[in-house]
Length: 288
Image 1: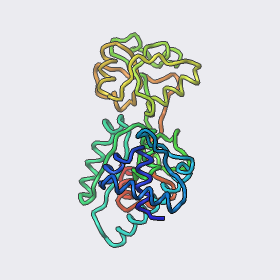
Image 2: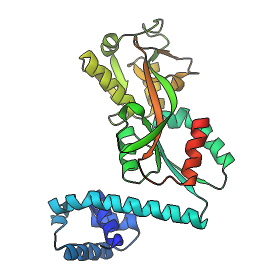
Image 3: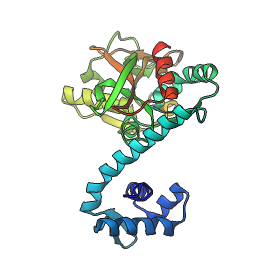
Image 4: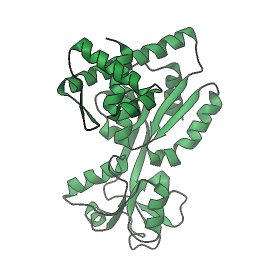
C-alpha cells in the first residue's frame, strides 16, 4: 500500500474535500483524485461517497482511516529519528498551549527556551484543550498542555504546574469582599465563559453537574481580554486561573469554598518517538 496514497486519503478524509486536501498537500487536485482511485482499485473497495460535491467516508473508508493515521504517525516518527541519527536539521518543537496559559504563563518560558537553544525552531499552536488533544493524537503536534483531569490513556504526560481556578469579579461587585464562594452562589450569577472545548469551560461544566445546576452563561468568548473587560464593567462574573488575574487592580479573584486546583501537564503520544528537541523542551519546562 502506497504511503503517499494513504497520506492523500487521510487529508481528504480530514478535510472532506479533494480540492482542500490538494491545497494542504501542495499538489494538483487531479493527482489526489488519481491516487485515491488507484488506492481504491488496489483494495477493490470504495473509500468515499462522492455525491453532489459532498465527500464522505464509506464504511470501508472509516475502517481504513485509523490504520492510515497509525501508519503515517509511525512513518513521521521514523523520519524524525533517522534525521536525528544523521544529524540533519536544527530540530523543531511543535507544542499546543491553551490560550490562558499561552497569554500569561508561557511567553517568558518560550523566550528563555529559545535563548538557551537558539538552533531549535518553536512552533506554538494556541487552541482549546479538546482540539489540542485531537491534534496530538493525530500527530499534528509533538507536545501539548493538557489538564491532568482530562488526560486520556493514549497520552503520556508530566505535571509541570498546579494552579488554582478562582471566581473572578469586578472590584466593586458585591462578592469582592468575600473570603470564598460556594458553587450554588456562583451559579446564581450571570456568567462570562470560554466556549466548549476549553479546560476553563470543562471545569465549570463539571462543577455545575456536581451542584445540580445549569450555568447561566450570558457571554461566550475565548478572548481573555474581552472576558476581563465584560467582568470589569459588571455584566457578569467568570472563573480564571489566579495567574491570569494577578496584577489586575480592577478585578478580584476569590477561591471557591472548596478550592479548585488544576494539575497542568505537558503531554505526548504514548509510545511515540520523542525527539531530542522535544525532550529538551519537556525537561526545560519541568525545571522552570
